[in-house]
Length: 264
Image 1 (tube, rainbow, N blue to C red):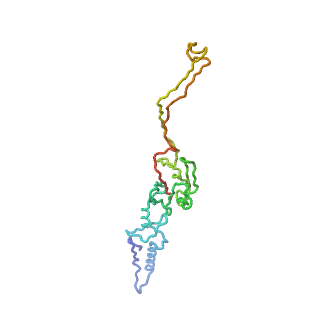
Image 2 (cartoon, rainbow, N blue to C red):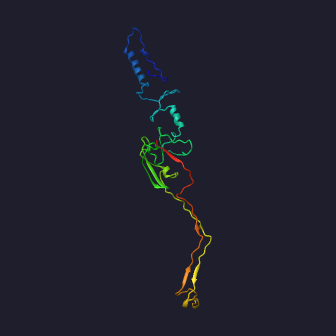
Image 3 (spheres, rainbow, N blue to C red):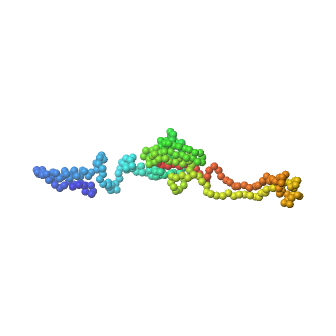
């Protein structure tokens, strides 16, 4: 008979013989057939055969387990503790992480783990730089404040492999909820400016006409028509001005940080 539910194995009752007994096929064959069936249900130590059901540990531990390396491997408690205590390992792939790396004691995400981050800054693909070996086709165009900076991820095993990403630390664009991936140019809300006029005046100068067309010879009064006349306006003196304020870009009050992204 096979193993019972507790893993105990018992030979068939027909196996037992004594000295002088004649062993019949019915006594000889069933025990070996039963043993073969029982051995087929065992877990071989060299790992050559797969499991056919769940492995019930009965509250017991699996001890001396090696560190997992593949996605389908079991991991050790040490690996689990390390992952839980590592804030970089707990971020989902694709997550954007804002960091104030100007703070004393700050450290960037490590580069020698199974996960990988990219610093979204142009110019860091050279030897020893943070983005060495993971970005290609980096391009930067435009001038401040309108800069476009992109690169293509080149990292085996990354879902971002072959995809173009925006190097936001260089382009210095603000992130805004809604419409993921789409970009908008700078714009100001329509508004008005005040006109300040403390008061002003214009002077009109009329020189008296002479000859037949002067005022004393005309019913219409001075300056009605004719030659030898001069009508002019003096220079304008005004205190009108338009109020204005601004700089070289449109922006809200802000403070600089550095942006990283998990790509594996």
